[in-house]
Length: 311
Image (cartoon, rainbow, N blue to C red; front, side, top):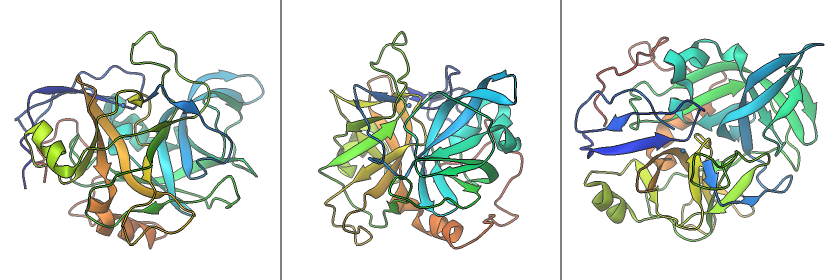
């Protein structure tokens, strides 16, 4: 099932590198992309306990400490697994995909910038983990199949660190949806990145309106059209969650993970990877201690602009 994407500029929500990729009718989009929470409200500790920050080093200090900054978000879906966006790991020719030891996954904290040794720590509201493995969807070619699993040593569940339930039903989600991330305080490039986690209420479009907006089959995406609050650069991989859905996977007291922040176009329409469209792929990863796609599908060194037909 090919996605016939129109000529629109997509800005993904990931690194600080400006992404210049164009989503076109061709199979090979030009390189570059990024989506961050805009006009959101500061989160409180424990409000989004399943959110993790994937951090990189900004600078090293003496005594084996460094200043770490979030460059992508993610969602805990199992005690040792995080769901995030695949494009988080394609910057700089897949540098972090090939060198995951350079990154840290931080759960419980709502701080963007942190000075830390990078060693694994387990505290009530501050848990640091090194990355053991990254699995990118075998057919990833942004924005298609923009999903990845990150494996870490087990988290310790507390009231500040726990998991979200992935959605399973193929449906429209309405009411009480929100996204979280370390975004900017506005849409302009001059706006500063937030020092604390932000949450924003998100208005979602129906699948029909989403496909109509893009003139494409968007069954594997969720679209939002918020005007007062939205995601922007810096929030890639973060969660889109809802409550009060009719999805049978939803449980009382837990947010339902329906989307992964993926990209946005010049008209501020944000697209999220639809979690329910990948329920089988996710389930294989959740039940495995070291999930790896079959040798025919899994690739250890992805190539930029590879000819993969979006399905």
